[in-house]
Structure formats: structure tokens, C-alpha cells
Image (tube, rainbow, N blue to C red; front, side, top):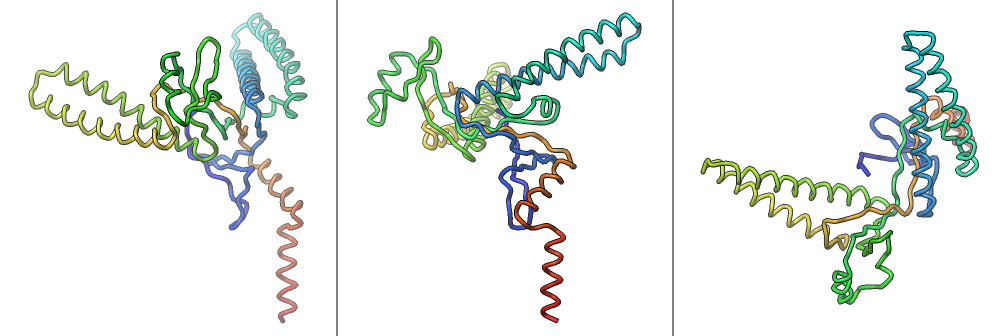
Length: 274
């Protein structure tokens, strides 16, 4: 999952709307919250299928516009109609399950934000024996995933997830940097260049150890072989300007306040004062 700068959108100077989030100039709306792991996995897969097909339909429409001959245009039109018919049939099922149409969101910016994840690592029977020696070990921390066994390293929730991802990305970048530096050290015959590379290796190694120790103490991670398993998540979709205005207006009306009412209150208070 890629980490982006995300911040809740403010509806007033003092209120933050948990259903809105602003990213790179776009305002996203929380379409759906999923609290069941199986449902989240199914939704992620179902949405991926619908998005891929929606983009195929768009691509066919573009090719129809670019067709050079009538026969080519006719063949592409039939292909698009077939895809569209299949998409609509799937979308009817999608709507029954998730209460909204994929057609409304498939080709606009959207993302799934994990709100709870398991950090797992594959382990052998020998490693499990070693882990069992830890006084804090629980048998429920060993999971079966297909033909593999996994040990639960940590459960991370909410705002900790982006922070963890950034920390893991830093460590991985430093690990890659070390690989490249050591390769450069082996390939150079220049004593001065080799010395500078060795100094850089020492700096990166020290920083890597510090960051890895921090992750280990904070999240209980003792391995680089980490698997992120989403447990809960929110589905966010970018709103158009008109949709955002309509949402904010409906929220104002629901709360019993509107710009006109606020203006009326101010004028009444002023009249009483006078």
C-alpha cells in the first residue's frame, strides 16, 4: 500500500468532517467502511475486476473514435457493447452486495485506506520452536496461510499504519543502498574512492541498525520478511466540485444551520443590541 499525505477536510474553522479527506487538491468522500477481513478482501477483488473492465470499455470507445474503416468501427462497437452488457450485469450484483454501483466510482480517483492490519512473517517449524520460548508467545499467534505457517508479529491500527509504512520504506531503502554501496566497493580499484564508499557504508549501516531497532521495539518485528494482511479498511472516492457542495449543503441542513440562517441570527442579535 502506498503512503500519501492525507488530512481530513475541514467543513468550518472548528469542525473536521471524518467523512472527507483532502489529498493533492482533491476532496475524497468515505464511501464505505469495512470491518470484516473476508469482506474487505472480497470487496478489494470485486472492485479491481470492475475497474479493469471499466477501463477496457473506455479504451474500446477511444478506439472506435480512431477507427479508420467502417468494418473496424463496427467490430469495435460490437466488442464494446458486449463488454458494457457484461459490466452492467456484474454491476447489478455489485450494487446488491455493497449498496452502490461500481459505475459511479470505477473511473474516478479512489483508494482503500487500511485501518487495521496484521503484520505476519513466514516461519518454519524450527523457528516456531524458538518463538515458543518467548514468555509472551501465544499459540493463537501462529496462522496457517495455504501451505505456509505465519507468526503474528503485530497488529497495527489507525494512524500508526502510514507511520509504520514510512518506517519500513526507509529501512528497505537503506538496505538497497547498502547492496549498491558494497557492489561499488568491490568494483572500484581507486583507494580514495573505496575509502569514501566504506565511510558511507559505515554511516548507512549505523542508521539502518537504529531504524531497525526502533521498528522492532515499536511493532515487535524481528524479520525483514513482512507480510501486510489487511483486516479493516475505508473506501474513499474523489468528489466533483458539485458533489462536494451538495454534500456540505445537506450537512448544514441536517444540523439545522445554513448560511441564510446564520445571517438571520446575526441580524437579529444586532437588532436587539441596537
